[in-house]
Amino acid sequence: MRHDDARDGSDPVNGNDEAPKTGLNQGLANYGDEGFSLFLRKAFIKGAGYSDDALNRTIVGIINTGSGYNPCHGNAPQLIEAVKRGVMLEGGLPIDFPTISVAESFSTPTSMYLRNLMAMDTEEMIRAQPMDAVVLIGGCDKTVPAQLMGAASANLPMIELVTGAMLTSGHRGVRVGACTDCRRYWGMYRGQEIDEAEIEEVNAKLVGSVGTCSVMGTASTMACLSEALGIALPGSASPPAVTADRLRIAEWSGRQAVINARTRVTPDRILTEKAFENALRVLLAIGGSTNGIIHLTAIAGRMGLDIDLEAFDRMGRETPVLVDLKPSGQHYMEDLHRAGGLITVLRELKPLLHLDALTVSGRTLGEEIDAVPAFEQTVVYRFDDPLYPSGGIAFLRGNLAPGGAIIKQSAADPALMEHEGRAVVFESAEDMAARIDDPGLDVNVDDILVLKRIGPVGAPGMPEAGYMPIPRKLARQGVRDMVRISDGRMSGTAAGTIVLHVTPESALGGPLALVESGDRIRLSVRERALELLVDEAELERRRQGWKPLPIVAERGYRKLFFEQITQADKGCDFEFLRPPSMQGRVPR
Ligand code: FES
Image (tube, rainbow, N blue to C red):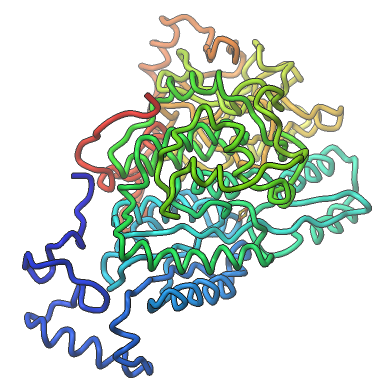
């Protein structure tokens, strides 16, 4: 059994094996007297003005992750109102409740450090409170994976509802949107192509409205993967945050949640091996964020499934990139929406998908694709004439990454994907910050920048620092890309020839810890190879002399994090949140 499902007919709190309880009657607080527990619960909620008629309905919980610190979820109040309308149209009772909200640029040390905390919060608040189904409103990068991880483990009928992408804006006649353009303009500023006044001017233009990043970054990737998994409604990934389409999806999510509560469409019926294979295929075809593979690994892990990255890489060789969105292409999420949304992509991928996979709409993925008419558009390329011939993400191995590493080849410089160069090593993010812009730094354009200690344990939280800046003295010469290697992650909105997720990480003594400035490194994306060209005797000598830095956390979440965090190949989930045994590997 994959889950300890508290709603499967038994009641672990009250210790009986009667027929499943529903609505307000389930999951009673334990006062040693069930009748009194329900009496008390009703008394309190009636204080909020509810009638017995309302309280006897099917209850749909709505997770509210609106927060003043999270502009990516700035439309949460409107979405909640629309979900509630949908629930009531179907005769249910909506009850919203808060969980942690994690915003990318407002979370220190990094939002990834908090993802598992949010997953725990999500799971336990679903378990703790009486509801028959739940709609989870998420959006910003780590929120959707956290919700899917937590809700998958709770195994209550659920529908993911993303907040949707922000609108694009304009700067001096150029269309701009967060956050690929944030990085582009910052690179221009570092290279002295634009001045202080202009970088401040563009700062007010990059984010056109509330909502998630407007490119195929991690948020958009997770929105598309949720739809591909079938755990979000068809057509739900692409409507921008502030549109009528987004609100209609919210209303439908509420309606459908009531239906799914009655028909018991639980996550284990949706998040199957076939669903994960479909999602992996879509991740490749949309040129999705490299973070997507970590998050899918974590979500699949909750269902007892490992992701086989070698097989994923083979899948990539037969799955081209079709979606022309930044950072791999030129368009924005609102353009994908006008082009028909993810269904247009799914239609192109149809021969490669498991069309019989069930979705939360109650229909199969194939039925949903067939229900939407095709039309001419210019954002999604045809399968036989793709944007990029193979999948967006390639899986690398070699003596520098025995557990693997990845590169987003669709957003890399083709001229650098077969490259050998001299390593310029930074021992930590702090070391890099101190030296990268030093005019005396011994670095040239053919070198390979190596950054250590930004893995899951090292930083901690595996920050998106893998997108290392080009050293200022080279940036001023017009250099825009170099091979960069780290055990960290990078934002899905970033582009460049950047090797990420090197496993095992350097803080745990992985081979990356042994690299010294001046070593030669070879990257071959064609051969899927990442090699440190130092002989084994010398590496062994270094290994004997390597000493780990102390990892200090005396108490609290930080202590739990260090004790439980897994490596990238297990999705950086906490070990104790994964099932005791795994049941299979995907893709096959
Ligand atoms: Fe929230 Fe990009 S910062 S989605």
